[in-house]
View: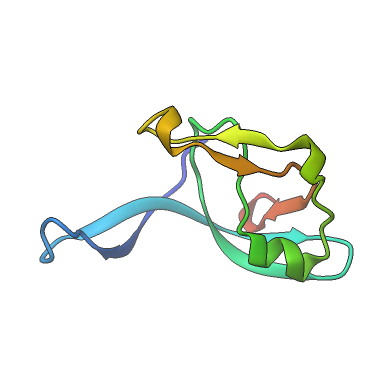
Length: 95
């Protein structure tokens, strides 16, 4: 599936250019709330990540005894603990 790229801000290296990324509009739902958000499509990601502030607003329960380490392209030196949970995500244009 292909997603359209959207301009998301200026390139920090060249401020005269925009950065383009594949964003979709989605609704995330938890036990106490739901929010419409812009979500970045990352086809190489092993997990979906959600900011802690959103997790708290949605009423998600984070199991801190089952923390996993996540990291990006810089490798293990940037590993951060992440707390797994389940959340409902509905991408708007997929029905």
